[in-house]
Amino acid sequence: MKELAARIPNATRIDFADAGHLIPIERPQAFTKALFDFGAGI
Image 1 (cartoon, rainbow, N blue to C red):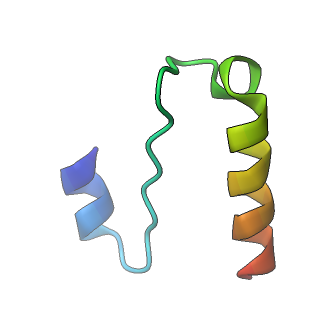
Image 2 (tube, rainbow, N blue to C red):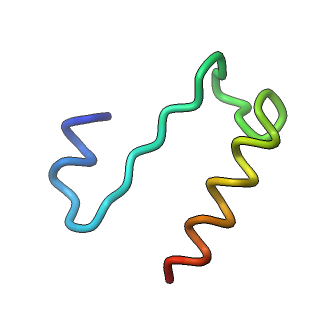
């Protein structure tokens, strides 16, 4: 995924520690913060 994000202009890659494929369920606070941070930047 690092390579893919590097090829997309203005892409932001976020790593969620200790999370698998269900990030909103496994890391809800971190996911919500990332979502709000993204929204604030557009």
